[in-house]
Amino acid sequence: MALKRVMVLTGGGDCPGLNAVIRGIVKRASQTSDWEVIGCTESFNGVLREPTEIVELNEKTVEGLQILGGTILGTTNKGGPFAWPVKNADGTWTTVDRSDEMLRKLQYMGVDAVINIGGDGSQRISLGLAKKGLNIVGVPKTIDNDLSMTDYTFGFQTAVQICTDAIDKLVTTAASHNRVFILEVMGRDAGWIALHSAIAGGADVCLIPEIPYDINKIKKKIEQKYNKRHGYCIIVVAEGAMPKGGSVTGTETGEVGYQHVKLGGIGEQLAADLKAAGVEHDIRYTILGHLQRGGTPIAFDRVLATEFGVRAMEFVMEGRFGQMVAYHHPDIVGIPLEEAVREQNLVAPDSRLVHTAKGVGIEFGDS
Ligand code: F6P
Image (cartoon, rainbow, N blue to C red; front, side, top):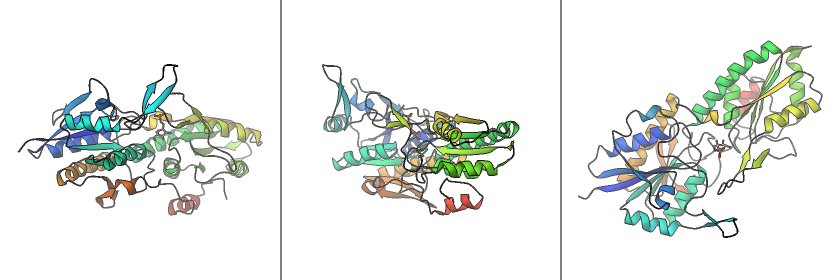
């Protein structure tokens, strides 16, 4: 029987565990004599570029990859086959749909199936291509944990651990200087990273996009944490958090093909607003930024990523296309791509975890 070819790619922001998924796919494929695995660089760009940028993946190339952060294939969160940026004669940019051209190219390359490892944006691309007949399987990744059809995305727990370690460090310096410390963490529209790390790190205040805050409630909590000038206060703020009646803090990057507002700056803004509201203690803020996405995945994410990789390859072998692998404890299941991207996974203000956080005295600015 002729060897079949599966192409693997990673799209969107990088995330600890991407390489562990690639390794799981390649190792599972190598147990059969039917499938060979190739990798496409920077999401689908490797196919769309001329000459193409494709790498061979075998057991040797994926050896030890479970511990390596980032992605050996490279990634991008700009453009894609449905919105490829093209420069106009006057220097402005426009986007063109190159999906049909790409599908023809994949056919010419002898690609029988594709595994797309990425977040909601990437899985929307998977869905669009599946509708055009491509044999595709999605694997959910993101530190934000904002995909609703999986209990967890890999990378999230690593990000939470990094934030928790940061809180542990901020506590000692905050206590030594009697300071208020604000830690700004990622998560886009979802407060999962902030919520989990605030509970794990024993923060006093947690501000998330799903619960707009009242600055006076935060001021009150800070004052409770001080006896005259002695005390300290740890505030974890998600990058997408906002005051009641306000909006998110961010900037347009101006980068070609980048379709998001780049969130960030709420920590600095909050420090200024607390000062303006009359908080007299010293306030400092720290932005963890991309440190949350870098480095090695923790064991949980290595295991989940490996499970996703192995199952995604098995879906390919079984011909289960148009699906995204998902973690429904204790199983790895398949979810139709259409359902997988339907809605975001956001923190419900009346959820068990928010209840737990309030149960240990964490202030959300709404009480
Ligand atoms: O979606 C993952 C994420 O890290 C978000 O938490 C963050 O807002 C965004 O990506 C940052 O993207 P970039 O890599 O473009 O700075």
